[in-house]
Amino acid sequence: MRFLPTLVSVFLLLGFANVSRAQAAGESAARALHERLLTLDTHLDTPLSLRRAAWDIRQRHEFATDGTQVDYPRMVEGGLDGGWWAVYTAQGPLTPEGRQAARNAALQNALRIHRMVAANPQHFELALQAEDAARIAAAGKRIVYLSMENAYPIGEDISLVRTFHELGVRVMSPVHAQHNDLADSSGDAGAKRWHGLSPLGKQFVAECNRLGLVLDASHASDEAFDQMLELSATPIMLTHSSCKAVCPHPRNIDDVRMRTLAARGGVIQMNSVSAFLIDTPVNPERNQAVLALRAKFGNRSGLTEEQNQAMLRERQEIFGKYPVPRATLDDFMKHILHALKTVGPQHVGFGADWDGGGGVVGMEDVGGYHKITAALLQAGYAEKDLAAMWSGNALRLLRAAEEHAAKMGADAPEAASRPRRRP
Ligand SMILES: [Zn+2]
Picture 1 (cartoon, protein in one colour):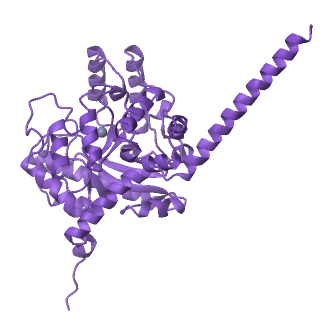
Picture 2 (picture 1 turned 135 degrees about the vertical axis):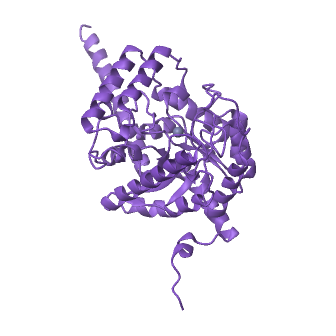
């Protein structure tokens, strides 16, 4: 009888060993599936890191000490094949000088992405068409599509859409956190300026359609979203958005609009910014401290490495003193599963806003991206669903935009811009 407790514990231990072995087998199967998939994120703010002269995309960085979330080693770790690298421009004054400065900055930012690819031909390759992604991934390289977040750099000159298209931009959003010349923003607390798109914004939609760009309605006001959806000849994308039904933030999309988006063939790519995933109450003291920090250090891109470290330390102190609730991987999954339940796997994807405020507790940087695949497998989604979510849907939209442009007979930009030789 005295052996009984020992026997019981042996059986229990064997039981646990089986469970943990089964768990490990499940994890490695999920990992293997994730590696098989072509994976794209539709909103990488990583070009912001490229502005730091000493920062090297080939080196592995730590989010905790460096503040970045994407580099080549962490893309490999997280099994991310590539995505849309954003030419982001903060909204500035709507004046001739402001527009000109934005245009020049955007051209520089686009060139920085091109330089990164040119300097690392063994790691990265520029992608211009939907069909390029699979070929680049098969060659063992990371895929670099360009997108533009906030079309402020085109100012009032619609012809610049074509200039940026020629620079490789294939996805474009009219507006960021403030109303501009093209559209109203979901983030601007001021009076509506256009009640959606401006007349120029409507021309912008037509020009993107004509050239074969995918329209991105993330950050746009609800009215601007409705009008983009109505006017666009091809399905539109929310490159980095979350669900209003789960977290009622003005930046998020409601279920009715999400269904209309899907009915027209569009997709929502899920964003992982805590403020859009969970309730994060405003703290006036923290806001004051952050504004003072910004005033002290100015634009991050102009900082030396030491200044950048000092800024990050002070920022950490502020957030230590006035903590903001941080969303977890489970919170992020709630939004993903809600979108899936609402519109299905053919209309959901990922644009986690890496290097732009994204990342959650349990998935702090892109190195943990494979966890999403594991969680979705556990939720019962099949490989074909995951393939659609991880790239199939986004590429379907790009293909639709390309086909529309071809049908419209949009003159091939490369050919048209090549100087003609005299006969
Ligand atoms: Zn954004």
